[in-house]
Image (cartoon, rainbow, N blue to C red):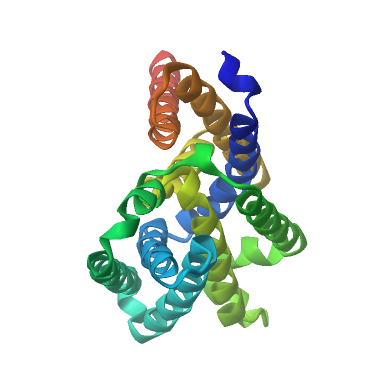
Length: 269
């Protein structure tokens, strides 16, 4: 248990607590809008940015952030072009991200070990600058959602009604995509690009099972996300497991438990 008092673990815990709020929160809106796969698309594009950052000497997280934001704008553009096939835009961007990342990987083998930390997560290697970036993104997410909660509610459940009421739908769609890009770009070093989608979607799936209202579901989503991150980090630290994978497996176990409990309540009722 000595690891709990280590400075690197405390930084990891702080970063995890911040991501445990923002990722499930943004993921909740994505799931309700049937855009849950956008996390996979932006995370793959972000990895391409990280690779470019290592090649050029840029701060990898910043490079990944810029790539993810650019991809979010591209997704919105393609969604307008394929209105009846909105998911196609996500598939196109994801394919482009994977293709670009694979090319960048082959240009220089020297950064392969560092890239692995972004693919699978390496929360124990969070630096002070990483933690500052995560904190800034968290503050931005919370301020925007707190100030725009009514507009986001209307947009999420009835986009046509939101447009008729005069809400700038295009602006809010882009805003949500950019916020998602921000969250993903700072999350990949914690749970990894290959697992970040789980942190976006599984807490939302759990929250929808137990929440009886929109606001109540939001609370549950954050609580479940925080619980999984804290418990996952402690379990991974004590038993020397992969932190990102442990967090995701705890989320899945929690979802299965909630499904079983809900089914049992229906059966007994």
